[in-house]
Structure formats: C-alpha cells, structure tokens
Image 1 (spheres, rainbow, N blue to C red):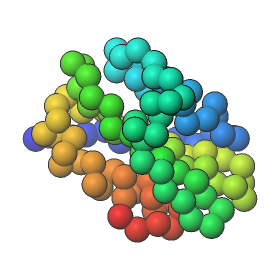
Image 2: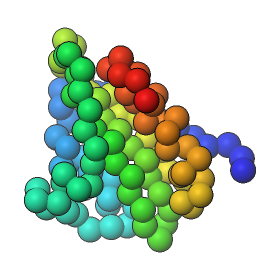
Image 3: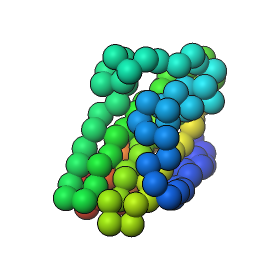
Length: 110
C-alpha cells in the first residue's frame, strides 16, 4: 500500500550490544525497556562464520518496527537494517524480505 523506507546503516564495533539496541528501538516506538531476562524472547538470533546477528519485531500503538543487527567480525562493524511501518499487516508483508536482506549481509539464507 505505498512506499516503505528501509534504513541500512553501519557503525564501528558492537554499538552497545543487543539489549541496548532493542531498548533504544523500543523507546523509539514509545515502549519501556526490557531486562536481560526478556531479551531471548524479544529477538531471533542467527550466525555464520565471522558474523552474529539478531532480528526483532517491535509492536506498539505507534506501529511496528522491524529491525536487525549484524556484527561483522573481520571489520569490527555492525550493520543495521530497519523499517517502521504503521500497522501489523504491512509489517507481515515486509518482514520476510527485510530480515532476508539483513541475513544476506552474513551470507545466511532466508
């Protein structure tokens, strides 16, 4: 139902780590932070030789954020792929492709 903006960014290092990133994204969606004990339920991890990644779907009254982080060991850089959409239906249509794009950074299939 129209254009969707997908942001792809890259930063040096691990950029705060999984919990800090998820809580930053939750804050951007108007939600409070989660604790370390809730992290495993909030993300799906993936890996490949030299890469560690995770994906999150964050739903709130403001919409849905689909976000993934991929750490590349050889360059000590973290890639982020992220989109915020207005509703769950749009997120459902976009989620597979967005997370496939993030996984492709690590050479991991869908």
